[in-house]
Image (tube, rainbow, N blue to C red; front, side):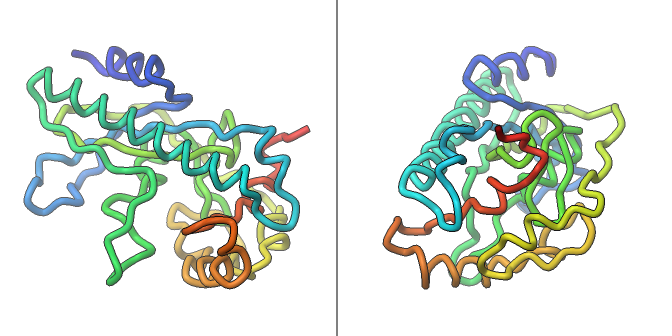
Amino acid sequence: MDKNQLFNLAKELGADLVGGCDLKYSPIAELPNLHYAVSIGLKLSDTVLKTIDKAPTFVYFQHYRTANSVLDSIAFKLSSFIEAQGFSALPVAASQSLGSSNPYNGLLPHKTAAILSGLGFVGKSGLFISSEYGSRVRLASVLTDYPITFEGKLIENGCGDCTICRDSCPAGAIYGTKPTTDGERNFDPEKCSRYMKDHFQAIGRGSVCGICIKNCPKNNLK
């Protein structure tokens, strides 16, 4: 198996973006050999994003959950393929949480794996922004001991002076003044979640807003 074979399979399974990297660490203490990651991305629908104005929509909520499901399926199948080649692999779900004690963090920050795989950067909003699709991307990852690295140049942050995401956030949860590889410095997930629950819970459990995604000029939505 080579990485191109793996990347091609991910594309065949429906991924729009795929890359790989050496994280230099494993997020699972019991499995220190799993320090490589396959990063997969799925582009969100332009048409669905256009339904968002100053509030999330039922259409977007369902689309978001469907995208997560597709990504989880791809990660599952990639993991099975990697294991069939004699390596270890662990799929990390698109929407993940470490539970009630740490609800805003997951096993692995998907955007970290995506950045180190050369797929994009993290903007002022804390969103991952890809070269091809802007912020219109959902991510998932596969941890593995299959040696996969990215040898190219990492993509530089490209927000410039833009503050559209920050200015349009109804929760006031985006406070970043510059792009960073650590989105938590620019974004308050608890404030975002609390606002969603107070204002949009009727749309669905775990409602996601999407306004910052829709308004990012990197998307080039027409």
